[in-house]
Length: 374
Image (tube, rainbow, N blue to C red; front, side, top):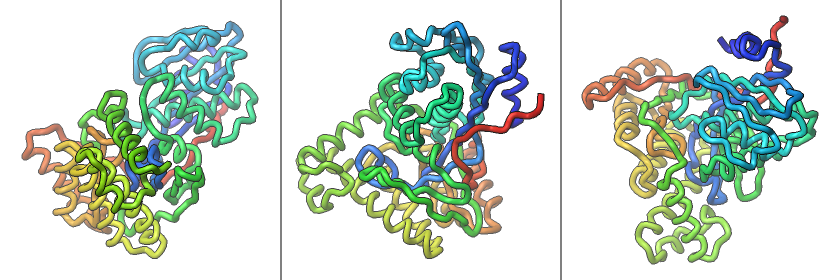
């Protein structure tokens, strides 16, 4: 299944792809909404990936198809300034942002990262395309430059006002490690991730999207708070200063940011010394802050978190931008079935469709897949 994109490319385009780029989804252990506030986040890449099979064209067209969506998008590469609509905008936006339009490209996408689950399917798509197109164009763009291009594609081309955490972990992750990302300095470093049990990812199936106004409003409030406090990065503001902000809603948003920043620092320390109970406590405190102060949770996330905790999870929280998507639970050895059953039962009680559970193992970064022999 992993490389089904190769025979499908052959069937649709009449030849084998030249390269296949792939990139992982992600979950953030802690540090939510800190990427655009100059804070730190601690995500892991997942093992589930999105694949982009690609080959050069001689007619100057960008031709894009997906195994998950019907239809074909064709647009001249030199006309990408006229925005492409729909999911293909993520592909076109990367080509546009990289400026590698001297030739055309055929691209077939196999998006195995679930969409709408808050697991960064969009960044996985962007990074898989970026890796593939860089190879085809013979570009020497660095990973940092690919991150910047993918963020620009999402912000300026697609119109989703997101930060850079998702693209950074997709391109810099290490297997068996979380990635501590400092958005004030641009530095990142791996942190060993070997929990005594499992990280359970719970796709609530409450559809998640960040193109709307709620996410943009959170960013606006944070920008206003930083300006009022006279700081460059809101995450590093003095908590006592935050208490003096004049607008109550802005004060709540800023309170989440500064306390979450402190939680990330404590979480890294807990990870390095193997204090899993403390990490769980910090994860749960993060969810409470996101629910009450930042107000980006939804009932499906809250119920999943509460049920997991009652069944014995060390900690649980929503992950990602919020307004739907997924939750994660740090589950001790031997309790995985009990936690799953508790969450399922809670959803039945609410009359909701059952959630989907995914493996939370820490996978590797984006890269080029080895093509099978033809």
